[in-house]
Amino acid sequence: MAKQLGFSFDSRACTNCKGCQIACQDKNSLPADMRWRRVLQYGGGNWVSQDNTMVPSNLFTYSVSFSCMHCQDPICLKVCPAAAITKRDDGVVLIDKEKCIGCHYCEWACPYGAMHFIEEQGVMSKCNFCEDLLKQGLNPACVDACTMRAIGFGELDQLKALNGSLDSVEPLPSGEITKPSFVIKPHKHAQRSGKGTGKILNLPEEL
Picture 1: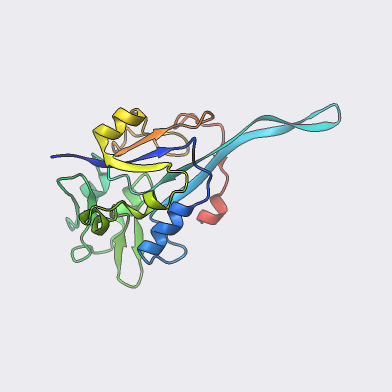
Picture 2: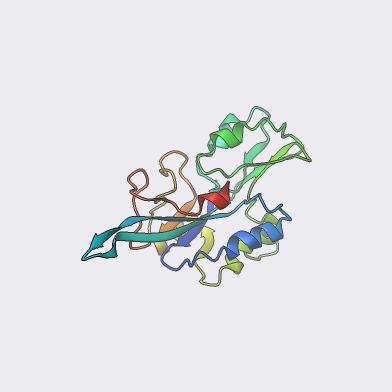
């Protein structure tokens, strides 16, 4: 493989505005309930009584923006019985809608919830790294939409050189599963995947 494209994310800068999520939906004409890119808010802690006053105790919150991770070891590709999922020479993972049989195997296997079923077409869909924009030398829509410049993209090795090699924090699954093409600059309160004490705070809107 000549190179591996990936995304970077600076959780310290994210304001949870969801501009990236909206830009992705607009760029790809997605219905309101289909999100190829998602922004999850994670937090924890509680309030305790002190001198008849409720005070915060270990309260924290941070956000994580992510889409299909265009994994180095994509499990979706392995489980697809129709060979509809391929990985290009630049590392971008794509779904061939002409081959897809809509069996949902990729959806069930993906640890990131990146696969979405298009009912009208009977096929699966997901982030395609804005391949049409890449061909024009332009940035993916989510990158340009981020007002805080928290989202970046490029060759994974270069992203790691700039941002470090951390590829997962709560509420994301461990990067050991599929080796995501993703690096994250963690928020100061970020917790290790699988070791979290908090919960997803905006889960109702994701359902």
